[in-house]
Length: 321
Image 1 (tube, one colour):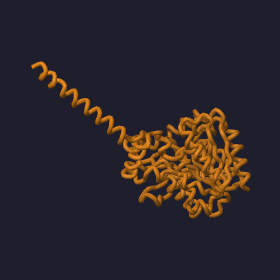
Image 2 (cartoon, one colour; image 1 turned 135 degrees about the vertical axis):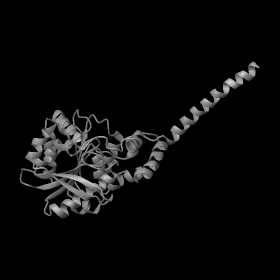
Image 3 (cartoon, helix red, strand yellow; image 1 turned 120 degrees about the horizontal axis):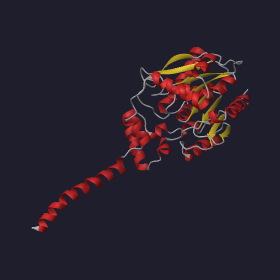
Image 4 (cartoon, helix red, strand yellow; image 1 turned 60 degrees about the vertical axis):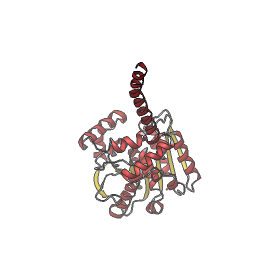
């Protein structure tokens, strides 16, 4: 009787153990990296109003960079444009022009990174404005005034970048002077994904990558099997795989002068991505100039070293004249 009772008691234990084992195996095989899964499934809703987002960004800008956004926008005569997307039917790309107060030498399309907006890159924009460049800063998908539900880590954002460039050259500024693209963090991946597009190849004169992101699977840091699973789900949910997002094929034939700005204390972008971007651009036909912000963290170089950032950008742009 005791033996039978023990067997009966062991059955629930075995069942629970099997469930745990199956759960662990399922997670090992199918678990999605945080960067792919949470961003797609959990953060797809905006969650914050545009007014709150704008207020937060202005407050952050003042505290971290000492820039009063309202005064900045007044000085540089900010104007909003609504650029139609060719990638997503009905989607409008919120784009903002800041006009230089110097003798105009060109234009630059600027693409911010994750959890930011066009307001967040005013410290970097200031360097171009002071160098005589009009700035066209877009809000990327899901952030700022964008109505998109998903961020795509540079994939659709790269197409949006090209749409903004095409719109500016075709509808607003037919004699822009020098033309360039600037991207920070995820915005760097957007610019990288745009670098093999025809209008960039024919019309752009330079590119600037500030703490740029590389391939998605490098960012997640997950095992290959998880990245493959995440890539499949990503393709199913939002229409692009990790291979689609990876920018290395797009930049390997770059012919334009490129400036790569790095943070010495980078902890967001994996070192493997930074090295891969640098090596790919070095091997490409175009020239590569590098600058590293000493002691700076990710995407904070302009905040920490505003004068060096400005002088580096000015010298780089001056070399193109």
